[in-house]
Image 1 (cartoon, rainbow, N blue to C red):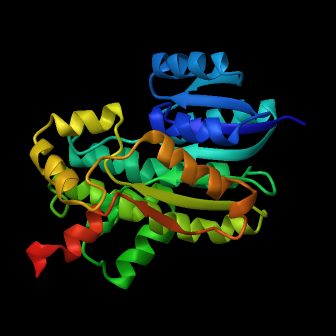
Image 2: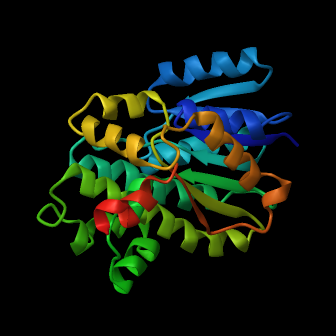
Amino acid sequence: MTNVTVVIGAGSIGQAIARRVSAGKHVVLADLREENAAAAAKVLSDAGFEVTTASVDVSSRASVQALVKTATAIGDITGVIHAAGVSPSQAPPATILLVDLYGTALVLEEFGNVIAKGGSAIVIASQSGHRLPALAPEQNKALALTPADELLALPMLQPDQVTDPLNAYQISKRGNSLRVMAEAVRWGKRGARVNTISPGIIFTPLARDELSGPRGEGYRRMIDSCAAKRGGTPDEVGALGALLMGPEGTFITGSDFLMDGGVTAQYWFGEHFQ
C-alpha cells in the first residue's frame, strides 16, 4: 500500500518539512489557491517526489473531508503537515479565528479519524502563542476540547472580546498547541502522534508581508534584540519537523516546540523587563 504525506498549505515551511519526510511516499499538496499547490508540486516533482495537488479551504468541513477522501484514495495517510494560515497583517480578527483556530481544529479532527498506525502530524503554530499571557484553566480546556463546530461560539472569542488581529492570532496559535495536546490523546489510540512547532520569524513570503506591514518595525526589533540576531529559514523548521515525524521522535507527542531564536525569551525576560 502506498504511504501518503498530506501537506496543507503549500508554502515554504510545509514544503521544507515534506522534503525531509516524504522520500518513497506520495505527497498530496493542498492549498487554498490551486496555483500555489501547482508551483510547489513542480518543485517537488523535479526533486524526485511523486505529487498530487488539491485545493482546500480549511475553514470548510466539506472541503477538508474532500481532501481526506482524495488522500485516502491514494493510500495510507502516514504524515500530515498542517501549515495553512493567515497572519495579522493579512486578515481581520474573525477571519484569523476562522482559518487559524477553527480550521486547525477541523484538520485535526478529520485527519485524526484516518491517520495510519505509526503516523505522525505537525501543526505549524507560532511564537505569538507564547506571548499571550496565561489563560484561565477553564479557557485552556475550552480551546483544547470544545467540539470544532462549537469553537467560534465560545464567549472568549466573540467580536467584543477579540478586537485586534494580533490578539486573534495569538489566541489562535495558543489554541493550536492546546488542541494538539488534547488530540494527541485521541490520536494515540490509533497509534499515531501529533505535535506543534511554534516558529519565530522564518523568512517566507508571509514573513515578508509582516516585515513590510504595519508591524514591520516591531518585527525588525525582535530580530535585532534576540539571541540569534537573525530570522530563521524554512529548512531549519524542516529539520525539527523531520525529527518529530521520523523514527527518532517516536516518544514525542502532544508537545509544542518553540523555535524563535530567543525572541520569546527576550520578550519575557530581556533587559527591558529588569
